[in-house]
Amino acid sequence: MGDTVTIIDIPVLLERIESLQSFVLTTHVHPDGDALGSEAALYHFLRREGKNVRVINADAVPANLAFLESNGLFETWNPAAHERELMQADAIICLDFNQPDRVRGMEPVMRASTAFRIVIDHHLHPKPFADIYLSRTEASSTAEIVYDILTAAEFPVDRATATALYVGIMTDTGSFRFERTTPRLHRIVAELMETGLDPMAIHRMVFDDYAIGRTMLLGRILAGIEQHCDGRASILVVTGEMLSETGTTVEDVENIVNYGLAIRDVELTALLMETAEGWKISFRSRGNVAVNDIAAEFGGGGHRLASGARVDGEELSVLKQRLIQRFCRALAR
Ligand code: 5GP
Ligand code: MN
Image (cartoon, rainbow, N blue to C red):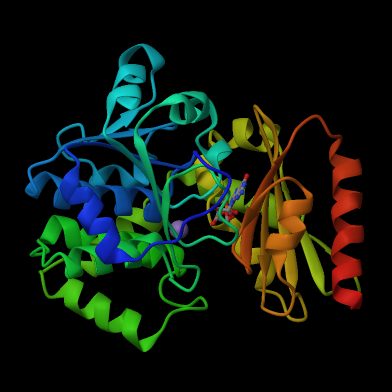
């Protein structure tokens, strides 16, 4: 584990994969569609190559993505059961993250392991903790990169694999509307659809299959929206009380941050969510301001227009004030 980031391309990755036998795939905490879809697709590929593969994640699969699961594919980190796997695997493949603390409790074992560490990711500014990085910040999603890997390896993408990749691309592009939704990406999606996957059913399972409490939660969050910086920034807050009173969990808050940007004149938004580990902040930008720099100042990171951070032990009012000031300063430039 050096102090440099060695960027490689697909042929080098495939050569390396060929030379190794046992793999652990992992992804970031609160895994989303791209994280799990990328893992599932790469899992199917590696299995077909005759490799031993385990997928071990710091957090469990959220209910709306459970359909990606097959035969206990996704395992949730349990040191007693998994420490040896991580220590003894030939390789650990880190999907959809590029900072070691994104796997939280798994980080010490991931670092201590003698396994060859491979990062496949599309976030900005990879941190040096792995041996090689297939890092493409211009990719819409990690799933798009995995698609390119599978295509280069001439893997015949079946419907299950195509569904996993489709979910990754769909969720990370906000259903094909964010930056990086290119003609090429639509061609990839067309090819995936040709396996017979069902876009309507997938969309419904991922985005439109909530318990009523989630809609009530949405109402409460939106009712409290604040606009600042001459109307150019907005703030949304989710407290633990709002979650418990509506019978929802942090998973139900996924994507609600986008409402903060769906307002005329608003260029920057943040959603502050109370969790057991302090405040989780989601940042979104319409395009002019890069929020990954702002997220980094709060100890996080991510993409230019979508980033996040976790802040522990700070009073909501203080944190909110800090954020508003930072937003107004960014917008004044
Ligand atoms: P979200 O707001 O949807 O949770 O995350 C948006 C983006 O920011 C994602 O690409 C995610 O990887 C990144 N991100 C979210 N939370 C964190 C965090 O705590 N640390 C870092 N480095 N990135 C984060
Ligand atoms: Mn992603």
